[in-house]
Amino acid sequence: AQSVTQLGSHVSVSEGALVLLRCNYSSSVPPYLFWYVQYPNQGLQLLLKYTSAATLVKGINGFEAEFKKSETSFHLTKPSAHMSDAAEYFCAVSDRESNAGGTSYGKLTFGQGTILTVHP
Amino acid sequence: NAGVTQTPKFQVLKTGQSMTLQCAQDMNHEYMSWYRQDPGMGLRLIHYSVGAGITDQGEVPNGYNVSRSTTEDFPLRLLSAAPSQTSVYFCASSLNPVTNEKLFFGSGTQLSVL
Image (cartoon, rainbow over all chains, first blue to last red):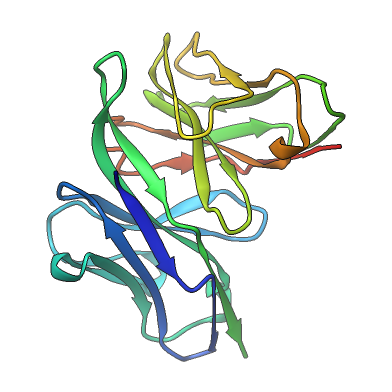
């Protein structure tokens, strides 16, 4: 069974500092990996995704993540934090599964979330 | 573009009451799903659908019912509300259920069960 672990439920950085949000996954097959962002009182938005192409994935708002198979990690980084980056971030893994009716679908499993706080 | 629309945004129920959370999407997405979000637990899948007339259970289906009579709509029914169902509920859809490469989320329904 696939699972996702996000290390640190809260991360606090100063404006302009490096942002590093950690995500480790377990999956029996090569996975699709995602980072989603949730701003206060909103739904989740896709930040970036890894789908077995380049291991370094660039997303929106200057974020990027690197897929490291040997470490089963998909950490999210941004060189310089901005106040507007304050939000909750979710790592997710998708594996191909079949339901009882035999229909194949991508089952997403989300991590517990990391709240990013940016101080001026 | 409306995207994924959820109603209501807020709801307070008494234990034992029933209600339906509405979800509609206008993107002709095959895949639709319901998640609940609880502090420290991320998002957990309740039910999902890979097309009209096809639904299946997710990780936490007990106490919830769904149906998918059209491509656009995927309502979630609480049969007899319990305090444990106090949560924020999100509907999400995607174009390709096989990969689910990008989920589009609604803005959520905050439900309190007293």
